Amino acid sequence: MAVYVDFVKIEFRGYQWCHMLADSLQELHEFATLIKVDARLFHRNASYPHYDITVQMREAALDKGAIKATRKQIIDAAKKLKIELNQA
Image (tube, rainbow, N blue to C red; front, top):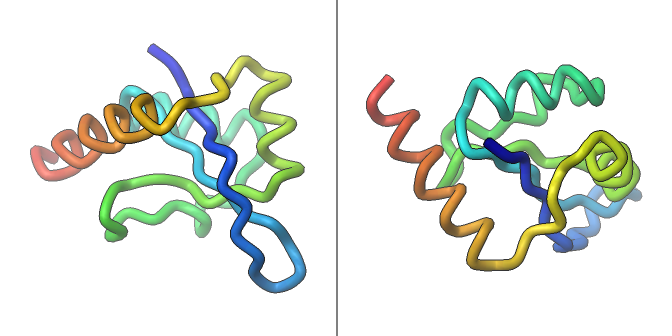
């Protein structure tokens, strides 16, 4: 199992944001808790479930073992999470 972060930098409210995904929703939520990401940053109803995290949070995620993801890894993880969410 793995947690992935991308390198998108979306400017919003004075911060730069990117995305965090994982191979499972459980792992994603546990990792978010580990790095103290507010649960309100989870986007359940987006085109795929993910957390929006700041660039600073991305650094904390990488320090705790998250993977710098390629576009393909992000898409693959997004598909898995979407399937898992729809089966719940």
